[in-house]
Length: 615
Image 1 (cartoon, helix red, strand yellow):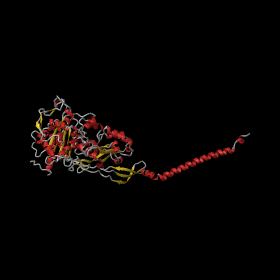
Image 2 (cartoon, rainbow, N blue to C red):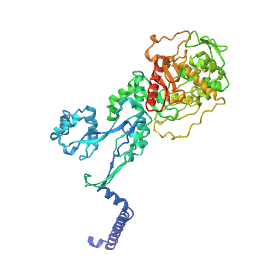
Image 3 (spheres, rainbow, N blue to C red):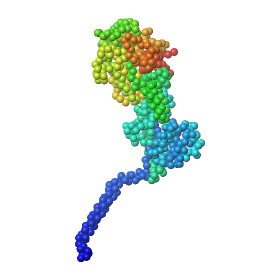
Image 4 (tube, rainbow, N blue to C red):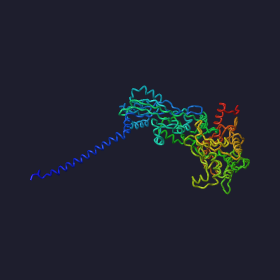
């Protein structure tokens, strides 16, 4: 039988028809899927893809705003924008990049770090985009590049505005500086507002008022080709310049304060007690903000940070020091207001003090003591024994309550970043922070501003202003005419308002009295200064040991402090001076304060705002 007879033609046809049906179904399904996808893209997602198509042809380019200026109270420039030049390279126009960089190095100064940064940026940039090589060129370098321009195809010298600080280190901590924005700073802010710019305020006023100084970004709609190359600017929305700021700072007084500190480490804060306006705020040593704004090399910046004198550290706001005897007028006033002492009450100071049932002896700074003293003479002569006893009788918690009302242990709220809170201890504070009980001996030490007590220069100046204003508190402020950014501070009221005058009289006696610790600066003054000296120990001295400055390393010497306001009849300036390891407050800090006060009073006299009877 032949094979042909064995074939089942009917079965074969059934198989073929089945396979054709499956293929037809698959083709139909694919067709319908394609039609659905096309409908989805053409109808539902039309707007989205139309916009993306437009982006391939039109690019939005950010336009950097001009940063606002910063001026002092008389309109003198503290921070400005100066024309500068940067060096850029267009990669696609360069045939031999290593050779170009080598040749450029003969004309302009290119350090290895700059070249390494350029190469890193080059790897991420498009070939037709300008890549920055050097942020700022000197005039000599610009001239040299202009003469040799034919040698460097693809190299461009681009003008731009760079931040400049005319007074350099004098206002470095208060004005601050701008620097390259970091990734962490971008994450904290809206990155879209910083497109087209690479700088941000890093410290001081530049940082605190960044949003006002920066301005608003502009936009340009630029037509591009398929490769992204710019062809034509279709539309331009101009950027909005940053706001110009005027500070209460007086740059001449700031310079006087810086000169007064000289080579000492420390801080001077001067403010108008009537308004809280900061007149001077200097911290030494300082730094050159222009070097940081230009982009300091990482190694140089690390060296600056590692400097043991800490030039980047704003001592006026962040330096916390034992206030020493500058707290004595406040404690005496608090004790009198609380009924612990009578201002006319006297005690005999023999130079030694003992607590009941305690063997330890607390000594006065004057070994033989001060004899019989009352409130005024205890402050004027800075009698430690009087305040040891006052503190013991008053108790630490009552001291804490009153001193915090004067601003100790609290932030002032100044419009600058980084202010640190001081410490005004109490039983609860020690238990919370050290998990230890409080001892009477610690109360005694607190009575002379030692122990756990810490304060910053700005807090001392603000607290002294409360005395000058007889209870009216003001918030320190740098922005001129804008000291209402927070709620008013509740004034400090006393049942016996005459205690303000007694306290002020004790500070006047400190400067102008025959036995006052600051009497040396009160000579031949045509006006009165109310002040208080302070000397704070850096290291503890044993009970049977004597303080020998010559035997100690300079950094273990006592801190010198002085707080004051003047003129007493019409207070116009409140000052706090802290000199690290400066020794005696009367010999070191007080003369600096007089220099600053006298400069400001003289300026007010010259402007006809004050009459002191100066010859």
